[in-house]
Length: 229
Image 1: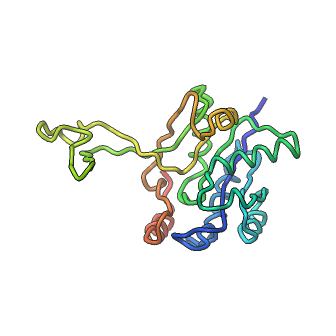
Image 2: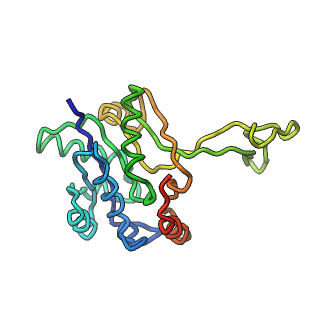
Image 3: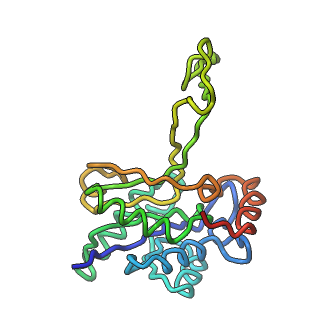
């Protein structure tokens, strides 16, 4: 029997750094619409739900083919966590339709460069590894330093015994593109990650996020490449 897999995209109307960020047009397409289209092209996803408090975001989401669950005011402020919005969606689906998914894909709208094949491959990886949750990351290999209390230390290597770059340890940075979890992980741990955790590695180009205004130009350039790894 196939799994019930839903995508949840939290998308508040407010944003301090970039006003109306979720409706910002990048490469000719609003930001929220890019995530919805990616989910629509992922074969295993059966339902796409946008959690929002904003009429314009909700209207755009419905027009693009997603369901909308309206977020209450207490979950719409700057201090509201993504976990609280995710839980609200699961509670609403269960209470109004007795619907409980097998897997949830939490997609962050601020990651517009992801591809459907990564979503599909990550679902398959989680199931293959019998994992309970999964995060996405990109690899880095090099000489990492850390600043703490005004002091610099070589973190990933000993500068007194320098390695060749290719011999330095490979590390991974969580890119926030999407997370997959079984509903019990969120309910029991109030966290998107828990139980047996898997990591899905993505290209650094697909990992670009919209956090600051200066990110817009870089994202436009990546989208223009039409890059598929």
